[in-house]
Length: 251
Length: 284
Image 1 (cartoon, rainbow over the protein chains, first blue to last red):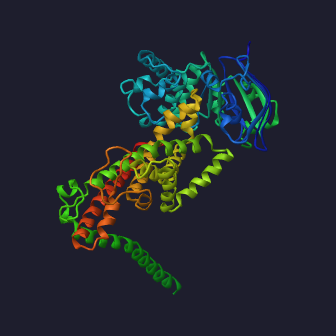
Image 2 (cartoon, each protein chain N blue to C red; image 1 turned 135 degrees about the horizontal axis):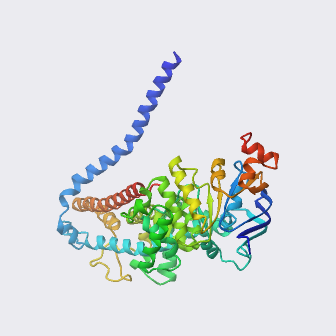
């Protein structure tokens, strides 16, 4: 199995609105894949299919297949909770729980029934180190997560996701609410995490996509217009729409 | 010219609005001063710990006060779990079902039903059908029905105020619905729920009409020992004293009103404090 994720002719409807129209693509393990496109093009919808976060939206239904690690994740025998331990997610706006830093990181383990203090403390330290936040918070793990800065909160959310030990991480515009320095830290982090995880990121920032991703998919009005190596997308796109978008002619 | 006329109209309206606001406050003020003049001097430890008596100067509110406490505690024990659970179901689970929307309409309607109707319901169901008689538990069950809609609505409002992003964060980490609700959403909403519950219960303290129907006793010489005992409550005691011709008893009534108001004010105060603390503590 050379592909981590494969989608086959995926359609999504919200009620009668046809949000995604037949998207087919594959993602290799230990790569960063960026989804770009103007607002409302369906890239976030597509991302949220991979951990089934769209299930909560009223009127949502889909067609096609999504295979992660060889399993159809919309199949009957899939437990959504199990899937989400494999496929973590970081959201656009940092959304820490209104609890301590420590409680935030270990929550994902506690809900699996892990209560051993040593295991939790170790997991907390490891995850915070992976998320490059440990040095800033190690003396004050009992502090409320809401007292952290926006950039720190987002790295905490990443640490929280890593603690569950996923193999794939979805990021929905993870830096769009952050200042440039925090954004740079997040990007650096993504490049480091690539060696252990498969990362799919939605971004509005094209320089960001160019800097961190191996492959880029361009979406427009619910369709996958072009999917190629990032270098090709940004230097030599095959489609005219891609060309117009990356040169800033619309979007 | 017309702008001058507008300014006069503006000022007139402002005065009128101030006047309207003051009416309520002045009335309350007159009432409080009146009651305080009549009753404040009557309040002492004996007044609180004495049994009812035919002699006004010997009579106390002991039985009624304990009855009110009994009713309060039992009503809280019954109404809080049921009301909060119903609120959670309607807001978190049943949102889209037709069943839930029918329930919702009914609950909204129930909140507007006069309390005497609840008394009739309580009399028929708890006192007669269940055979509970004129007991504390029958009264508490009746008042529980009365305040259930308030608790349900308050719970739903508090849950609604918890942002979607918090739920998403929990789900995305592999939490089930119940784990998300119990470990994240409920704690975040607890301030709002507690506030609503306290306001609902302080409403129950003052209710008299339904308790008259389900058999609160006016003249009783010992407080209830078990939930199946007879009882009296403060509003009943006040009502009884006021209807006596002797002047001394209306002094007693004024003193009892002060105690009842005090209990209600304290409970509302706690509710306001909790709401304030909750709003400061949780910033999204």
